[in-house]
Length: 374
Image 1 (cartoon, rainbow, N blue to C red):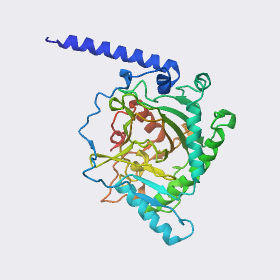
Image 2 (tube, one colour):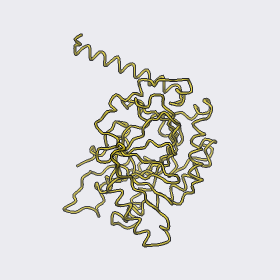
Image 3 (cartoon, one colour):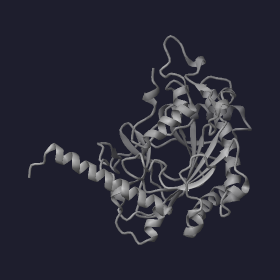
Image 4 (tube, rainbow, N blue to C red):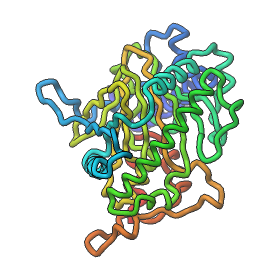
């Protein structure tokens, strides 16, 4: 049968309309992806299907062992200047070449890490009516639950639910946090903040700057915590836990459980970031690539959907979370890093402008950085 262009256009409109209806119905349940499974779902709705999942980039096969994401040991970093210097160089090298590394002996007890994973699990596995009360798409709320921040922008939904908490600079009052995870969210956030401050110092030094340089720029003024819940998926080959993306922050500290599924794009190959008990994953974000003038790399990464689960992770994003007039600081390539041989690649921008653009397009598989190039 021959299909005319008008027929194709009409089919596209019908498809678009069907998707909008399906998305709205899903959103109105206020129960997220877990709610679909609880209702007995055995096949995933079309809104989750990734029709462009085959991209020509493959995952490493067992016959070709890949390079591994660097693992850096922070043991004795604060006790020995020589050890600290070695760690700083390893961090700088990892962030230039990979944009990712795992850190062990970072100072946060494994008991706290495990309790944080359990706290996020408890939140997402509460009874429906209790959890519904937290469901919102209002980005001004300090604490909220939703599924897919870009649900209405993205071409496909991801197999993931999320608890979002703005923890710095103005943390929620304790009663504003869910009772089932209140204490551990507050404790973990404090400890991650301390680790983040150490990382800002190491990154400053790795760039050849004073240890306080990035902090003096205000890079440490915000902490945004996301507690992700990836339910077991009945058809994992058809969707993604999180689509390929880069992070819109200075850097992210990620806690993941032992199920796995996180991958980083390295030389057009997807490489696993295997869970290591007690370790945290650190990855550079778009904003630090911008201010370092491409010296530190914000790398594409994704999370595979799996038929086992739930997979639980906690991502802490270091970036400003306040957008009033007093927070309209301009960020551009650091002047001390520039020279005749290293001219600015990006224009100055505010975090507000950057996030507005990032969120307007959602996780579409493309970096936001080119939009800000000179």
